[in-house]
Image 1 (spheres, rainbow, N blue to C red):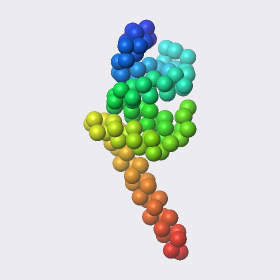
Image 2: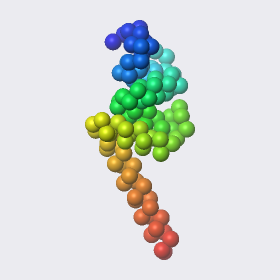
Image 3: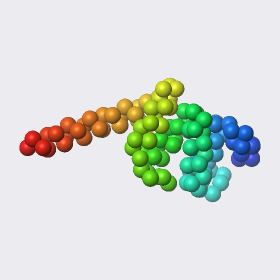
Length: 113
């Protein structure tokens, strides 16, 4: 879909169009790369409850790309998307839980020794 068509749909609040525009701006596909615009589009899609938008926003939060790194918010985004059947988001959320458990175990062992 052309940027013009996506922009029209995004202005109408279409979450799929918002997410596609986010990808375009994040990667510089047919537009000048602009991470702040990507964040804005992903967040708008996430606010509308669109799982791919939530997942992409979660990735940016997790990695701290163009936004302050925030594992709690990233996990929340992944969980929301996972509840809608987004497999990659489910895997990311599960990985984060495992990471926290492993960190806790390592810290406990460190204290004992």
